[in-house]
Length: 338
Image (cartoon, rainbow, N blue to C red; front, top):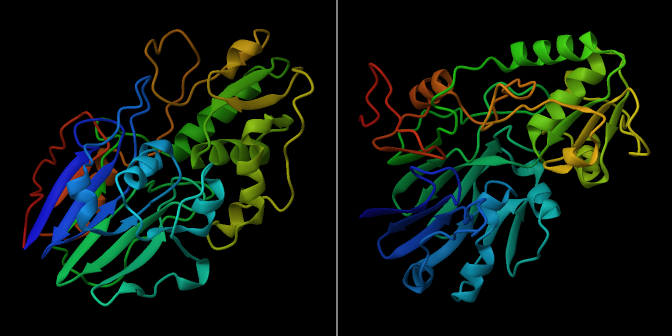
């Protein structure tokens, strides 16, 4: 019997955490907290933890890993499954971390006699993955945070003809219709309009930051500077192999130290823009007042068309859409089918 509990992440943007139980054994898909002042945890209890045999982590962002210390305090000491790069990005070490490496892609990786997984790249950040999980007699798909049209990172999907018992699919931008390639072109045109103006991009540790910086490096003559807090992301970007679209990769580091703000393009940590009042800030995510600043929305999750495409490709008897405050209503498409 399959039992699924949403402990966070559905009907809200954050604290992704999904509990799946089969015949008295359970797994957890991500274990995150909200990105709010309260750092609201998922509804994870000792009763859940008691049945857990594995925790699968899709990537290193806090809304997917921030509650791992809570799981440990509740007594969890089993395997925590994640990619090698995700482990490198975490600020804290965890007991019994189960790392998989690039050479295992496309292969079944066993956890125990009744649990195994395959994985692939999800395009959200370096090291982010989706999972195909075989749990007792059930098949599960978990997209993690997924980006269909990345500029520099690989995003794949399972190629076998599986009908899943349940699929959990990212719906983070279901209310949007965004062409990321067109947005990159618009950003490049904008910065070329202000050749003498320093421009700051408040940025996160994400694939979006890599996409925008790399595209501007290739399509403008503006020097690019990266704040120290973000340089580890770019160093990993230079070092990784299969996770990259090789034709888009830059073969040498292209960041410079933040010594001063002159006429360059500056990638700074989110909320650091207040320290550079002489620069124009350009925003690429959600804004409370979108008409106040230059704004080019660049998606880091599937938009409406992407979700339709993913739902057709990932055939499942039941689908749970997560990572959005908006309900998912796909016109002419049934999300539960056999």
